[in-house]
Image 1: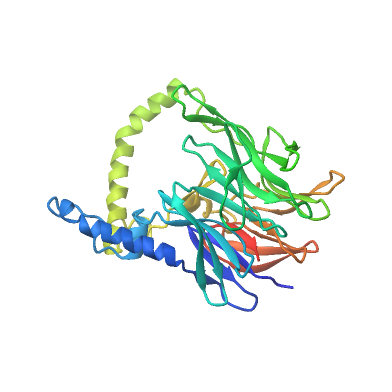
Image 2: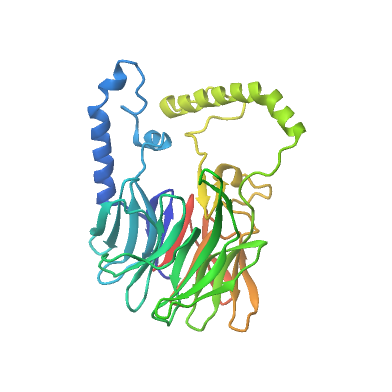
Length: 386
């Protein structure tokens, strides 16, 4: 039986009901923030008019987004409760908020809104409705926070110099959280210079007991979920250390020789991109037919930067934002692990026992060991079953 689902794509929220087309959920709060930003830019236009250098005035919304003008994004979603169908977190860089949306009347309700609220990932307990989310710190670390459904009383339940992310509530257990965690290392200036592999952690909020469920120096284990019968689901990807190792003299000499060429290419591609934004036509035509707009995007996915444009240029003709080495796994209570699908960026467990997942472009469902296609999108970052 097909169920409803929602997903985030490039900071926008989409919703899909059985038998209906995918719809964009337009937030009134986001629209107000964008209009406010535009008015602020308009008031200060005189500062740039004298120099003849105003990149954003008169620009169409799509081009403005390409320029990075839009920094208001939906960054976390979860299934709703108490008259709402969806919960989501919006970040503006300075102000953040938690919102609830109802499909019945397309209404948006503001649950939490304040300066400095910066959260990612969102999970609602199916019984108590308590919310778990990822709280970002100024020093680059992140921890798990818990709060009531009302949006009041945010309390951090993990600590340390680590990346604690993607919390989920263990099904059938009132106060048990699962999350992914990786230790981080810093240089003498205090900046993050290293990240360990992600492990799956189980935290009992009542007793305070913490247990590592899955860990391996060779792999990252991401997005843990646990079903009522105790089966553990997660994404497994090869671990890649961040930072740079020793650089050889040959590499340094090569970089020095190629620096002028790379500098010229940087200017050429910048002005070509500039022409694409404003004239919708490229300066460079040797690379093939003109494109409608620049489509290069970068996505940060759990400590790893993904070049979306490069990822979509697969040799076998298939399109996916992540490689086949990102595998969706399930582990039964006896410890037996098996692969459900490969090339998985995000997934969620549905109430009917199926598993909904995406590779960033296509959306599929695993039912009884069989995989069926349920939709398509673009630049999908997160998906949740409703």
